[in-house]
Each structure stands twice: as C-alpha cells, then as structure tokens.
Image 1: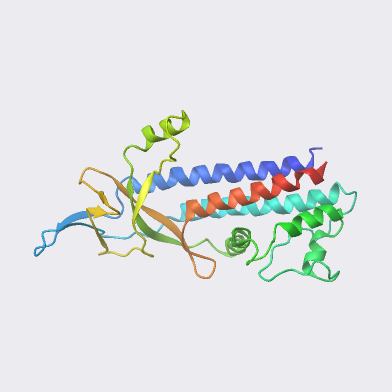
Image 2 (image 1 turned 180 degrees about the vertical axis):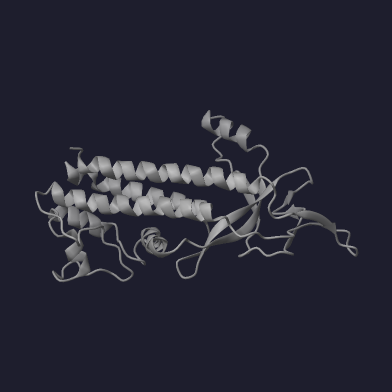
Length: 260
C-alpha cells in the first residue's frame, strides 16, 4: 500500500499537468487572433492605435482545465490532512480535511470546524497547520484556492479577458543569458500595456505603451483572467494557478516531516 505522502505528491503532479495543458490550450486559442485586432489612425493627431474588434467568450475547455488544476491542488491538502491522521495511528472521520476558513479559526475550541478537521493529528502537526494561517486575511492565496474550488464543484469557473501585453521578442535569448549566468536580470516575457477588465470590443491602445515602441510586426497578447467577484476578479488565470501551486507546495513541504 502506498504511503499517504505519495498520494499528496501525485495530486500536485496532476495539477502541474493541468497547468501545462492550460498554457498549451491558451496558446491554441490565441493563435488565430480571436480578437480581430486592427490598426487605426486618429484623423486629427495621426496617432496610431491597435483596436480590439471582437471579444469572444473564453472557451469552456480552458475554464474546465483551470478548475481541474484547482481541484487537484485543494485535494492534495485534504490528502495531506488524511495522511497526518493515519500516520498518527488515528482514524480519519468524514470531517477530516485541511482547514481553510474565511474568518480566523478557533483551534482551541474542541467543537469548532477547525478542531473537527484536524482531530487525530499529532499536536505538532496541528501547530504547523495553524502556522500556515489558513484563513482569508492570513493566507489569501490559500483561501482563494479553497473558494475557487467550491465554485468549481457546482459550476464551471467564469473567466474573461484583461490586459494587453507586449511580447518581448528577445525573451528566449534573455532567458538563456539569465540561466547561463551572463546576466542577473530576470527576463520578462511580456510588458503590460494596459490593465483593463474586462476587455471590450472597441478598446484601443497606442503603438507607444509603457515606454516601449510597438511596431506593427511586433506581437502582443491578451491575458485570460478569472471573473469571480469577491474572490478572483481580473486576476490572470495562469498567475493564480502558479501562485496556488507554490502555496500548496510550500505547505506540503513544511508538513511532510510529520508524515514519517
């Protein structure tokens, strides 16, 4: 029988696969220029603009993949909680799970939700969970992951488009220089030209943006962001997914020692 920790790691690896799939599917969606961006010139100032002509609905498969990544990350934490009970030679209950709440939990109240979810764990493991501050004001990335997962259990997550970004044509070369130690500057794949949510048909942005001249042959992209008010509104999906996986990996890494 596999050790409980192996199941936790498997869930994280599955989330990594979903994130990679999301990136690949996003690239495919963006490839044929779904926004019909055209070039216009102001008749009075002669200033040139890029204009977004259409804004398509974000494809359902993209939103489902994002939800699958979130589901696996949230499950990894519940698997962790289950394993912490098992290795303590206690019996998990239907309440066993990684405690995440909106308000500050009440770990000293034996009748609280927090206490029910960690019951059976070693005290040092419970203290380590407390240290992760698993509530909204304590660890927003963790709370956001929890809330997005709850939504995804009932319906497909909503997403829209935000922020046009100018793609750095030298990114590949700059990345090689960074990785080989030629430079200490971490390269940016893109520079945000405006941050508007959600992007609408008719939105325009100039060739000159963020002090970077954008020639007609240079490329730009539009980001896909979550559109879940009060939880994740206007936050770029891939950024949220990466922040979430880093958050889970850090928690799992810190609590792994209590599983052996």
